[in-house]
Image (cartoon, rainbow, N blue to C red):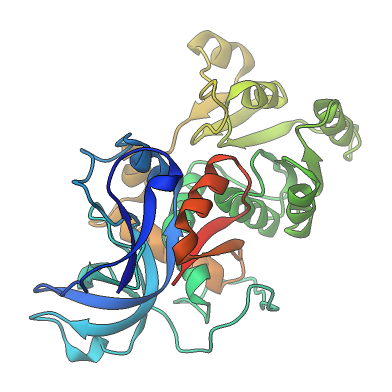
Length: 356
């Protein structure tokens, strides 16, 4: 099979497209013919030699990637043959191996996808007001976006209440999580301000339903947001929630827009100055709250025996109910290095996916 391998930690160019031996499913595993593999910012950190959330770096050479969707084409000992031919999606977990034409996954991690033809990115997607019991037809790239980025999005949404009185600001609104947050908030009836860098990304944010889409790289963007807020009914409204995956000076400026009782949800920082850290005194003086939903807090909030799987199911069901549709940017598997470079330079939109 063909796969992307990393022989030395370092720049994106260290990812090489090679021919390697096919993996074999062990007991309790299936082998998937990969149709789409997710690319995550964590993947880029690991490639550079930063273990990120992992307990340790993988041994080299390694095949990166932890999010895959495709068709089960082989099963290991103890796995029902009924899985053969099933369309599935899975988050592999700590063991990498997704950037490949074939990968092995524990059967317990699989989510079966409904039958249906593969469709292009620009298809018309039905919307509906209610969650269903399971995922409606989706293509493999969308499924990959939901299993990782989608589950994180659902984890974040546990920490904020959204309704028709909510005014939400979402920086990085053209990113994988950002596009889902914009759509979900609009579905809940909230007024949504989305920030993005560049005219093309701003246009995408607007297409996904934001009431105001702003280019934060342009001078005067903060005044534009303030003007919009003042123009809302009843003489203007303050921001009730900032869903902040950017941090830095942008995140700090947005905290200034929060009204009394508002919430700053911080779940990452793409700006080099790091996350916004608010003192207890500042929080108390302004009557606002700051929460970081990542890590253990998200798992505790989700509850149950397998909170990550519960969040994955929540993302798939939110898609099925029309709450959101992931934006996906596809790269050929052989161009994984280009995908990494584009993601690190913030030159991508939505979820980045590799297609063998």
